[in-house]
Image (cartoon, rainbow, N blue to C red; front, side, top):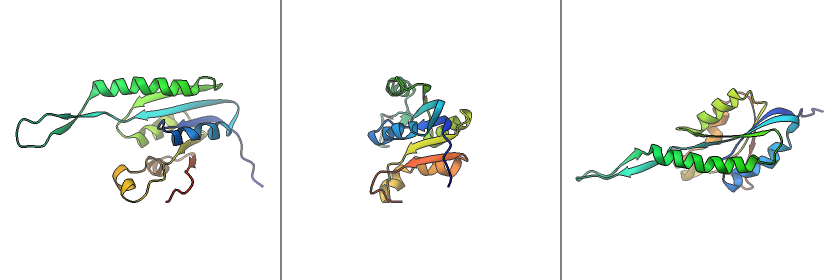
Length: 154
């Protein structure tokens, strides 16, 4: 019988949704004594519609000021989640592609176990929004614990 060795370096990725945050207590159960824990959240860039002065449609333009405000706001949320968890640190970054940020930071942290939730999207929703979890699984070469909601497909 195989026995799971408790993780010494635990990387928890959350999107700050109730489902994403469900991964936190389940991940902490995998932490070994004295484990280093990193709770990670990547903020996607904020785009605003630029006005158009003619027949062309408005254009979405990257808004760095709004992105920085969102990063600051969500950083406070992540820091609130880790307060009271011994050995835990919070990291919130602005990121163009969330899955790339997760993989990069998990490698940088020398992670034993990466834990995250998936929303279990399928069909048109998955086609439009993609699956961060699926992309992480495709690009990350370490151990991953992926949590799916009951009734999720795919």
